[in-house]
Image (cartoon, rainbow, N blue to C red; front, side):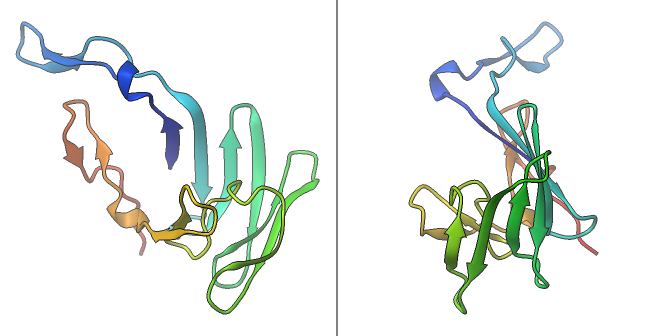
Length: 139
């Protein structure tokens, strides 16, 4: 799964070309691209790629991230969870791994979690409409 920052002022404008196809007037600018890698057929994250840096993510028995290591094998993020899923004994930046339970993501306010079911993530298609093409199937 990919995430990036997009300044709405720099968002490309779609238009119809001579063939009646809806295309953008320029490429969409991508800033702060982060790629999340998940274990096959699960919602359990196993890696984070940000720029040229790669990080391994270790999860507990129910799929919650508990540790993250950089390419040199140094521990850069670690946490435990209380019985309600809140972070305990956090080491590192809380937003480095912005999710706890498999479908719960921390947003803006550090302690706030939002249920963002990865199966139902909508992403914008080239025409600017919402589609479900970006979902992840789990069997």
